[in-house]
Length: 377
Ligand code: ADP
Ligand code: MG
Image 1: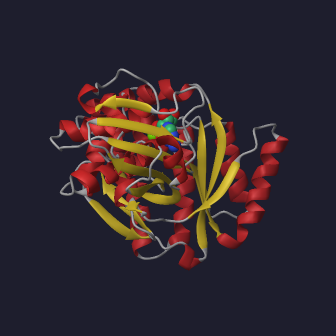
Image 2: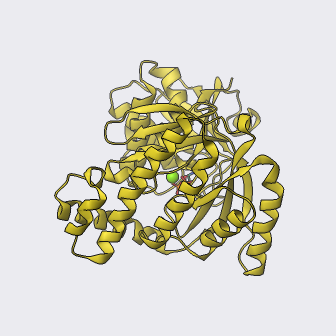
Image 3: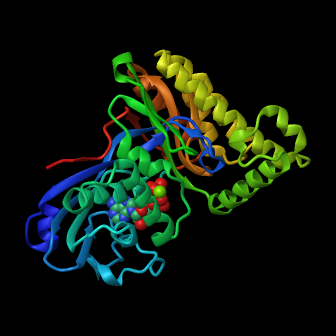
């Protein structure tokens, strides 16, 4: 893990920090409606190997950077300005900028990033990168920052520096999750609760089916759905859809807006139901709720696509207890709750179904609730 750092900078790092990708078990599009989400960390991590420098220069390099970018990006910390590049290095620079802006005395560093979190698949490689570096900088320069405050700083890096409007779930999950647990996270109050989800002890796992497709619609649909939710909250007369109930739906005149709101309201209830099931260790009963979530994303929120539906249907027919698309939609991943011993059979069925429909072969792997960000060496 230190070789890439040495090759880039010609000396050894002081330490290596890792932060995982995450998947959200249930609670899709609830975050910007002040609602609940239930993420867990996955095994795949991004590592940041870091060494302090004697000046205020930050140099970053990544084995996962596109070949077209310069191998090492660098800047003086005092020259970092939000929004002037769309390059991958902005995710790293943004973290330094946000921590500096918040008054922490961050000095110059050399940083080498490596990752096995799939990029752009909805497993949050961006938060994994920010959090690995954020944790390193906290340990080296600003040890008093709490993990939840660090999550806010990493989110600010992404929102204000990179210019991507994303919620607080990803960074919170990457930093605060623990092995064998999901976190029930109230995005309004910021409260988090560790909920036991020891799948492996129960002989279960979540199968991640990465369709490897990204349909163009995703970007425009995000803003469109967000506005529909705001309209719905206004029509109902609540601050956010978190405060609405199914009975309120009659107050929304427009059919499409009403269905968008119905997804958010029922999805919030699904998060609470799943969290309650986990607390009583009734893991298998989570399956049908995942499938109900998918149906709602497909029919009411209308963000699914043929590949996602095929993955959900095939996995379920092949023995999964339930499955749903995760992330922004129009591509990305599906998760399916399965018995570990059924993994091969389900994988084969899904792969065969994709081949027979002429879709790109999916990438399939098992996921268990894994540790959050930590120092590796
Ligand atoms: P995701 O769902 O994976 O978070 P995003 O579009 O939010 O997708 O973030 C992906 C972007 O984050 C990449 O395009 C790249 O700019 C940056 N990134 C993530 N991981 C790495 C890495 N290992 N090396 C370089 N850049 C990375
Ligand atoms: Mg991201």
